[in-house]
Image (cartoon, rainbow, N blue to C red; front, side, top):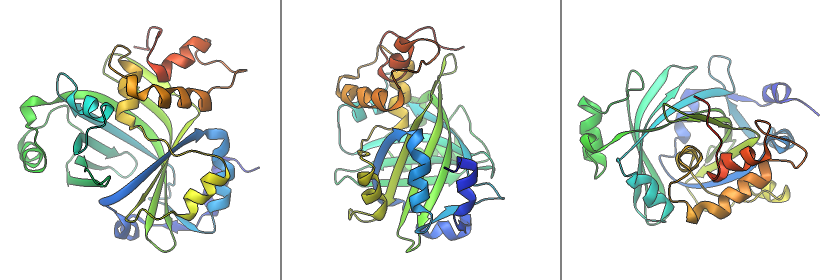
Length: 275
């Protein structure tokens, strides 16, 4: 069996310029979560049908994101409560390429995700100037009402099908921080299929063959639950239990404590986080 470093070069590459044709800023998203031990066999089955993004010779890129929310975490709670027509506001930096954007994501009542973004020089802990004007024009929020809520970093592999109609992101190495506490979620893979149509794709069929379920919880919500154990999370509990099940083997420990492993994704009974 290949290692991840051995299998990535087996994909034909695609450049950032070519991938811009498949931005899919107005799209349908389908998310899947599974244990990293299944990643290599899944990728092995995909290499004939998908290109892999390569930028400056790098195929597994590091992403840094800073999410904003209101002081009462309105955006998180609207997601938790299943509200339609909801928003996320964030900075995102593509670490190896140096690109950085201020982004507003809107999930409408038809289940489609629309993303608007502008170039910025770097991630900022504030929203001001052009970013503040952009926020006001693209959402019901104003900069003064928002504050930094969560830092999220992860590594991403990006795939594009040969028909150039869908894009797949595969994220590993999740790290959450709120400026005081930090927590990682090892062994979790988050794959997201992004396409303009709701039709099934070969990737969906492949994951079904591997008995991998589609399950949706955003990184922002997962990180919020992880670092703020007292926050409302009733509607997420089935998903959190599923994530806990697929990422922790009964013969393994996390941070030397099975209780800590459960706490990472449940937000309950958390030990003292890393400072």
